[in-house]
Amino acid sequence: MGGGEGITDRVTPDERLAELEKENAALRTLLEKALKELEEWKRGFRERGKRRSSRPEGRRSATGRKPGRKAGDLGAQREVPQTIDRTIDYPVPSRCECGGAVKPTGEKRSTLVEDIPPVRVEVVEHVAHVGRCKGCGLEVSEPLPGDTRHGESIARTQVGPNAVAMAVSLRFEHHVSLAGIAAFVGVWFGLRITAGACRTCWCARPSARNLPSTRSSRTSETRRS
Image 1 (cartoon, rainbow, N blue to C red):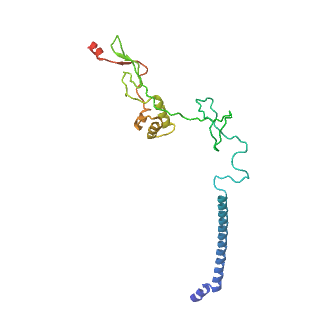
Image 2 (image 1 turned 120 degrees about the vertical axis):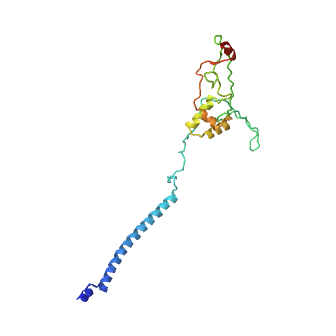
């Protein structure tokens, strides 16, 4: 009984062949679909490559006209200044390139050049004349730049307000480093300053508050003693 049941459950060669043919047909269908998708992708890739080669990035497509502005367009130019500071005259050349003599025609050609003149550091000495109070004997004078309220100067040589304003603008508006600021003012204006000194330009400094500077003197100390 057991042996007979085992024989009836066994797959015959014909059934196995039919099963394999069915699986083969399914795999062939999947392969054809994959090959079709691959070919479509290759075709699209080639088309994209042609478009890139015929029209580089940033280049406009051909329109049949020459590049540039339309004929007769004046184009963009700088605004003409209202005032002229100085004029440089160029005399008529005595000889032409061909060697012939040149006769003046009375006509003129001109152009305007806007430029920054050379700038050098201006050293200004501030001198305050000192007086003495008749009542208390203290020395009194007008406050100097950088003075404290008691008439004591911070430094013998200081950086002026225009240079400070430029350093502050370069630092906080244009984000230039301290070393860059020092190099810039040194090269273009001849102002020697260190990066550390640039930092102190915008630090709070004592002010004389526009009040007369007063200093005690030996004479007043003698009177009080």
